[in-house]
Image (cartoon, rainbow, N blue to C red; front, side, top):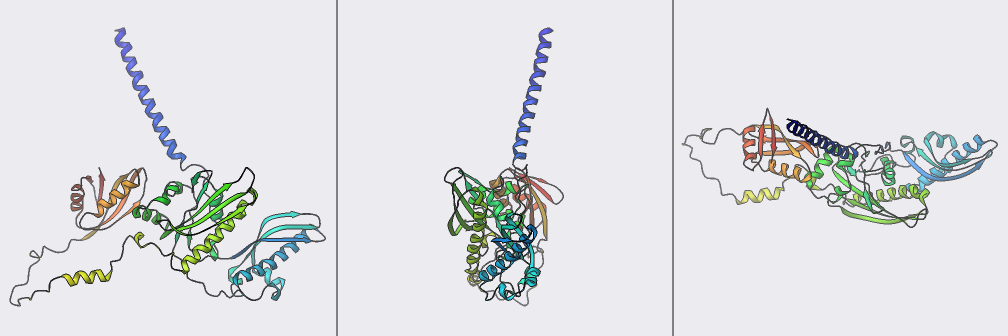
Length: 420
């Protein structure tokens, strides 16, 4: 009896140990997944109002008091910024033709980049933001130019041998978040980088070619194509110069558009260098748009258009229609196979542990005769995703077509659940 009691206790301890080990493994797996999305990762992009911003204005003024010196510095910065804005736009004229009241009425904000205030002296580097509605007329910008389609921005950074997008906060992500896109002809879609952004958009996404996967991501953000600005930072020595190589790429095939190099003297000058790099990359994209090289990839369109010439070529190969005997009876509906099946929309649930599983499920559903469209509407990488399927026929026929491909199908009210 003592031996049996000992064995029983040992068995219970063994089961408890196994249960505890299983709980630990589940906890570790959950912690790994949670670690990929937890934390304060995102950087919210600034609002793009379309106002004109001119930065890097250096001023040095004096006054009877510190407040007077500062007011004189802001007035001087406004005139210098207006002259710089005129030069950038290539418009004749400048601040000399406007009084201080008119200029002050067009300023919507003063951005202090750096300032030193003394009792009678003011030294600063300022940015001036002019209201677009008030300044556009004087700049000869009554109408706007053509803008691009919505383009998803993936700011990819290489530094220290590591590639990152939204996995951690990076200075390259911040530079794009701080960029005022209102003046650009490119319609940028800038993710904040928080929540699931780090799972959907990572450094590996740039190298993927699956159109189904790209289409799913672009649909999540309301974009039609993607641009990939890449920055490579090399630090010569701790605290020393930082060399940056910047490349503008576009599309799911990672097409090269242009590149350049910049150097920052130290860490304190890195934000300014990155801000300048963003403006230069934006200029590359604007030039590509003007040259017709920034059009959305047609393979990303979920409903591709069929070439009319191909349709006509197929019609030309058909035999001529046979003559109809007027005396013959008209064919009945049963002779023609009945009326056309009604088109309905169903939901298909499928396990999606990785990208390959998503592509396989979509390809299988689209291969069933009668399927007109199949789009993943709810993406759960590592869980169960949902596909919206437009099908000409009954749900039983759709289920039979999937079973014929080797899928295990569970049928519900307007819903199918498939698995291998």
